Image (tube, rainbow, N blue to C red):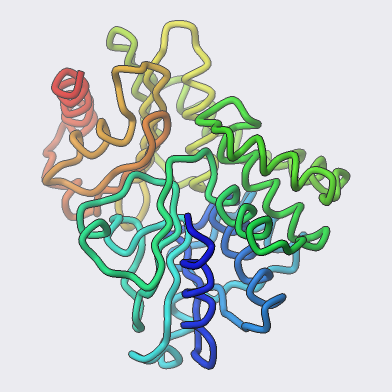
Length: 329
């Protein structure tokens, strides 16, 4: 990423109402990246507003907002406020990535670490920085170093927490940039706050999710699929997926849970020949949407589409993922 391109974005946003939008139902990496960019812009004299769509997770995401006093506005709160002339910077997401709502305004930039989609490749944004790194927070942290700025303790801690969460404490998808930004942020961050964020992240009621996932797991070779037949937070689904993947017999884990508006999927892969993002995209093709990284991905099927699977929906889901896994290998 060229420094001149970053300056172009900064200049373009001057004297304009600018919103920084994360992917729907933002996780700690998305929140940390958006907050980090907002604070960097403040150092440069630019004010921005953070926004998102979807229900805010009650676990790690909500705890992060509270601890760092981060203010993010939901789509509902911005109805009637956003105008067609407002600028939107998509962070930890792409306008055509399938997991971000098209809000009123002009998408002028995309900053993301997910695979680039074709529409993004063919769109002339004011600024585009999409790279394969472990966490989007690492990209934002690098901007500080390029501009020779230093984040304050709160911002450094938020960025470092986002990196730790999305790389599973530097055990998943880690790149040289993530390590470099860890060194940069670690000396500036509040380690006691990091410890606090890493603990007490589950509620007693979440044990029900573990119990259900364990009871319902089905194993097909190295593929493990489990259904949680009741709503639970996104982060809980991800935690359960990581737990299932820790089983010695499982190399690819698929967890899905029922919600009022549809079914949420979380996919993890330890197999180099099974890309989690491609797997969920292929399995849900024509039914819903899905995508993500090679090692972790997610998806969603609207309730009306999930109903088309008939009386034996779990069997249909199993078959879709088994066939998808065969087709991408």
